[in-house]
Length: 402
Image 1 (cartoon, rainbow, N blue to C red):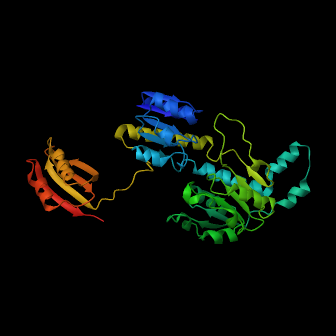
Image 2 (cartoon, rainbow, N blue to C red):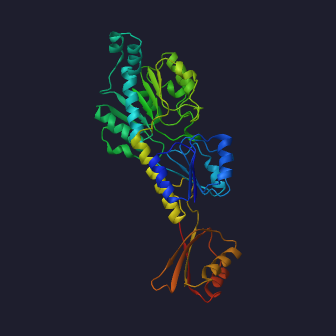
Image 3 (tube, rainbow, N blue to C red):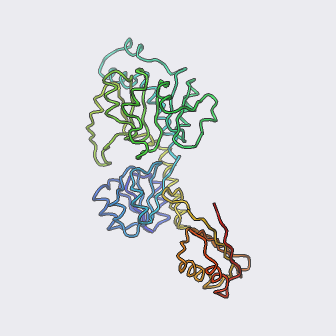
């Protein structure tokens, strides 16, 4: 097995990968055409990335690639649709960096309220502005934190906020109701949350459904002395609208850890007009970048590779569609060559598609049973062929499933 790591990766993790694969190559600066060329020449079975973008042309560059692992939570830097079209599994490492992102979120919240970066900048410039900064902070106790996205990270942020004697509102895009475990928290619709919150923090995945979830219209609902924090994904907020709200005094402050068009690993410069917007703090997409988090992510990526090596299945696969089968075909048969071949020949001749199956061999190895999910029930003629068309058949049952 060959593995290409096209991003920074923990040295310990690389050693573990080398114990699992025949060839492991780590090239953190690969991107764009260079990534495509290396995928073609090295032709790995597994590609591991963090922030490196894997568009359709990269997905199609390697001939034998079987899996792409995102050493992180989201997969919006990978063209999952292109991977699915080629039968390539895409997996991620969710939850491994939740604590790190939550810690940065709380740090940014306090920094915005107390203007800590401005304090430091003035002190380094030889300025003493105690009166200015003492009057700037509102304090967090009894303030309302609105959390958009109540998954693992949002839940950790809520727990920390409640420890600071804050009130918590949350809005969640899915069915999950994690924060209901905290009696001091309250579920709210998005517009209500924006109107009532003193601080709004985003913890949702990127993609079409959340693109510009917070735009000019939503920002207009917020209190003029509210704070906005995005440690989720670039594009979840309309950065131009945020800048306009800050410049017009319609928002007290904002903090962003993610930006559109971030530079690659090998590019040390990033010229963004957002850097000049007053009361906007920016960090360098470091939400998940603690040593604890990176070791945890590396360990999870190694686990995924080990599982793939042993079973051919990549855990945490995000592009595996659930079966849409309406019938279950239960075949009891002698455990001999030709049994399954007969079954699949019959359903193929009937134009029936098998979507999922398992095959159990009983003690002694004489008999077996196959459970095959199929897209429609076989007619009586096909059933007769299944039952009596081969000497190895012991029994056939068709079960309708929901």
